[in-house]
Amino acid sequence: MVTGRIVASILTDRDVDDASQVEPLLDQIAEPVEVLGGDGGYDRTGVYTALDERHSAAVIVVPPRADAVLSATAETGPSQRDRHIQAIAGKGRMVWQRDSGYNERARVEGQFARWKQVIGDELRSHSDQSRATEVAIAAQALNQMLDRPNSVRVA
Image (cartoon, rainbow, N blue to C red; front, side, top):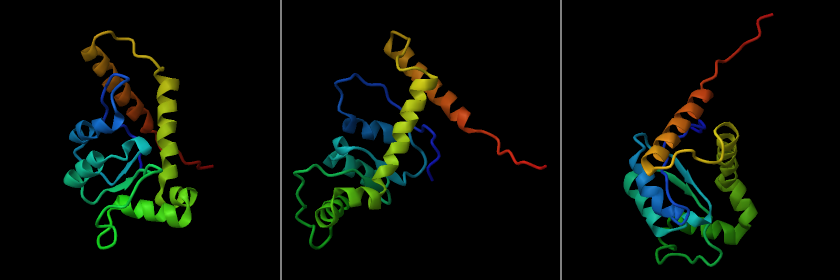
């Protein structure tokens, strides 16, 4: 279920590859992961392997790179990635985006915009430990803002 909650975060330098942080992020998540979505930067063997090892039922919605090729087992036992490549080849990338749920990623981008609007787009702390604490506090604050009462008009 998509809740808009921030369930894991990690603070890295700008030169760190996002896909390399999937395992440390998964370490922070106790609940089963249903869907992992990301841009083409997450089209890495390590991402698929990490998710398969920890949450084998999870759906991975990551667009394969333009030069992606099918695996050796694509004919007999296609992987999720193989099915994505086949769907793109058969129906086109735009149809794949709609059918796979890739366009839901826009909601995640909206969460980043909400973070920047409410918290700001810069961290104020100087040490790594303080910055990590600042991120954790900001995530908790944003999650608290999601707990809004359901109001019902009675008259």
